[in-house]
Image (tube, rainbow, N blue to C red; front, side, top):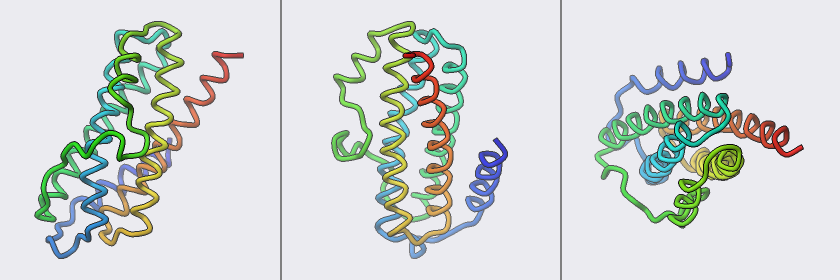
Length: 174
């Protein structure tokens, strides 16, 4: 928890700096555009939990996921404005790692109770892993300190959430 708090504080501190378009490279802009769309689907998935989940801890996690990702979307939109870049747009679900198809989203929406909990944690784990993969790539190619800081935060926070969901799935299926 302390690591997550530190990551949020670092993210907020780095995001108060102002940069101009010359401070963003193509990799950083593509990352922010894609991650904003990726996060939007994560928020959509998390919002399904309240009415469908059996597990209260899962409801709490989903609420945190939705709030964190909405905050990060706002940060990325602000940074895209600094970069004079187009806002996030639908880049095609199949082009980004971890994006769920419309069919998978419909399936998830049709479930409830323990069956929903298990499927949600499977899908959100894959979705988070996709965000981690995208973040690791921009760490290799990105240049802007805000973008790098955001990617590091995503890796840490979503890695922690993957670990928690994995523990839950193991407990629920044993």
